[in-house]
Image (tube, rainbow, N blue to C red; front, top):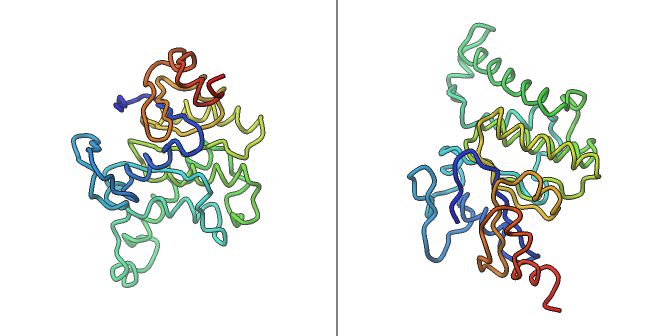
Length: 233
């Protein structure tokens, strides 16, 4: 598959099609047995997840992966980790509001505050994640990914478990993230209404086999896609 910069690109297919496996290969969790994965001229095969992150790739997960005992603010600040310049030793030796460590902390908090405002989760700022509703926790995980300042954002079922109102909000946020943050988005999603509405292009998979890559209308009416979802009859 080929994904152009600045696009919202969706990967669809029935359970077991290999959608999340694609994400795991891109981010270095899995190593593909053959082939290449190239991002901005860099071959990703063999790189570890933190190396993929430093190239500008962030992701969310099917099952929410947050630190439940930490607050929303602290979870989002974790997304700033790779941007931090102050080390443990220098940070422990320099004190006061004017120290480099303090200034850096303020800058990262300001960045996170903008994301909290963007996602409209101000009321959850200081609340432990374990005490938040499911839909809000999904937004916190999205916010942590945005805090990394990615150029490529991988969204793995961003609306899973959400109600219809939350799904509508997510539809607008996905578009705004692409436009306001200048991020290319690859999304795995089962909600076909969301996929067909926001996607510039779609890839359909079935058991690891590419059925079609094209515009939403082309994919919607492809015989192989209909058979994969609905059966031959």
